[in-house]
Image 1 (cartoon, rainbow, N blue to C red):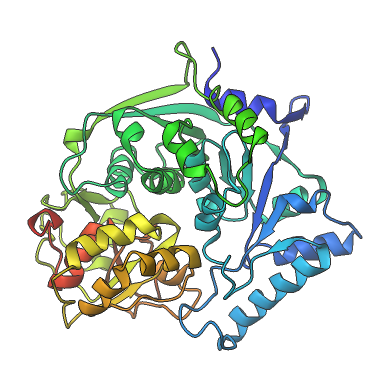
Image 2: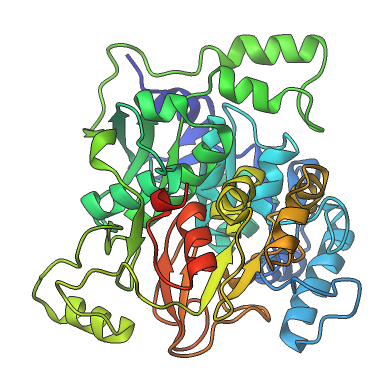
Length: 458
C-alpha cells in the first residue's frame, strides 16, 4: 500500500526522465524578495511569460522592517529588494501582497492562513522553511532560484524522489511542552542530518492532538533535521482550520475537495524506508546550547560532555561549558515570532505567562506577528493590552530577528532567547548568540531576565 507521500507525488508526476529525475507538476509557487530577482531576470532574458501566473503568489517578508512600514525603507538593499519584487509581480501579472497591505506577512504564515495552501498540493518556494505548509497535508519543499525560474516558466520542476520516513510520537505531552519542544527534541535525537534524503510524515497521538498552529511549527522545522520536507495527513483539525478561509473551496467545491482530502492518508500496510517512534513522556520544555538546532537539551538538563572541534567551537562561541546547566543564565533579548512561532496561538502562549507580570528591565523584547491578520487577532482578543500592561510592544509583521536581513539585529556577544528556527553563528546579527525555544520559555525569560523553566510560572 502506498504512503501518503507516494499518493501525492505520483498524482503530480508529468513524466519520469529515463535514468533521471521526475518532472513534477507544482500547484503553488510562493515568491519572496530575496530568492526571486534572478529568476525574473532569467525569464526576461529568455522572453518568457509565467506559464500559470494565477498559481504564483509574491510577498516581501525577509527585508521588511517591523516598525514604520508606512514610511520608506531606510536600508537601501532592503528597499531595492522589496521594490523589485513589486515591479516584477506587476510586469509578470502575478498576485502580490505588498508591504503594509492587510494581506502581507511572512509567506509561510499567510499561505495557510488564507487557504492558499491546501491538502494534496505540491507547494514550492525559494526558502528552506517551505516545509511549513506540509502541516496542511501538502508536499511542500524549498527550492533554489534557478528552480523558481523553472516553475515560473513551466509550472513544473525536475526533482529526484526522496525516500519516505514516518516519525511517530505517542503519548500525551506534559505541562508546558509544546510543538516547538517536540521539534527540538526530534532534532537532538536525529541530529541536523538524520533525516537527509527523506520526506517525513509525522504521526501518532501527539501529532493528532496538535492544533493547526502546532502542526505548522513542527513541519516548519523538518528542514533542520536535514529532511526534504515534513507533512501531516489531513484530518478534522485540518478541515476545520481551512473551512471558510479566503481561498478555501466553497459550496459544492468544498464537498468535492473534502471527499478527496479524506483519502489522503497512508494505508494501514504502507511501507516506509525508515520508521521511528518516540514517547511524549521523554520530552520537557527545551532550549539549545550550541550553534545548530540539534544541539539542544531539556531545560533542566546540563550541557552534555562531548569531544570534537565542532562541539568545542560551538560552546566557545556561545560562552558555555560542557556540564553546565543553563537555568538562571542571564539573557539580553527575547524574540517571539518568525515562520516558526509567529501565529496567534504563540502569542496566546506568551501572554499566558506574562499576564500580571512585568518585563525584566534588562531585557529587550521583540514581539513580531507573522501577519497583519495575526496582529489584528491579537488586538481583537485583547492580548495587546496584556502585553502593553506588562511592558511589551507589538511590532509590525515580518521575518524580523529570525535572520539579520532587516533592522532587528541582536548585537555581538548578546544572548537572544528566540522562538525562531536557526541558531547558527551570526544568524540574528554578527556575533549574536541564539538560544532556541518555545514561546512559553521565551515568555519566562522575558519576565525574569534569565533562562527559566516556564512550568514554574504556569
